[in-house]
Structures are given as structure tokens and as C-alpha cells.
Length: 129
Image 1 (cartoon, rainbow, N blue to C red):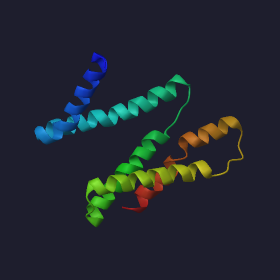
Image 2: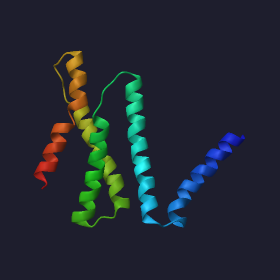
Image 3: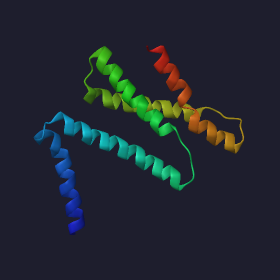
Image 4: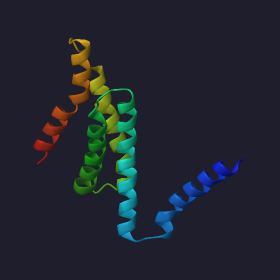
């Protein structure tokens, strides 16, 4: 193992141990925000390199966060149990949108797939209030 792999391993181990060793909520909140925004940036960067536009990344991340929050607030389900359930919900929402037939041109098809998650997600938020 070279020194580069060892440095990555030490850094990963430090990040895994950080919440157990350092319990200041502000810094853990900042770490979580960094991880969430790095996820969004990576998705947008990959899409931008290939010239694609997608609003689905944010939508499906929102589905996961919303399902976790609903389970925690209304059913008293721990977020550690709610996160896998919300992952299944986001995947099932993406499969539902992917399986819908489309009879549009290629450009309209891409545009529909980019904007499609917005409508149902807004209806879910509106109806749950």
C-alpha cells in the first residue's frame, strides 16, 4: 500500500470516528452540510460535463429528507431506521418516473425527465400540510 492510500484510509477513519469523539453539535452540523453539498456538487458536476440538465437529484434528495422527517415527527421512528426507508422511497419514486411512457420528441423527453420530479413532489408537500 502506498502512502496515498494510507492517507485516504487515515482520513476516512478520522471522519468515521469524529462524531463519537467530538460532540459539539455546531461542528457536526457543518460537517453534515458539507457532505450534503458535496453530494449535490458532484451530481451537478457530472451532469454539467456531459451537457445535461437534471433537477431530479435535488428532488430525490428531498424525497429522502422529507420521508425521514415525516417518519421521525409523526411515527417516532429513529432517523437511523428512517434513512434506509427513505432511500427505498426515493428509489421507488425514481423508478416510477423512469417507467412512465413518453410520446414526445427526444428533446422534450429529456426536458420532461429533468422537470418531472417537481410536480408530484410539490403535490406531496402541499397535501401533507
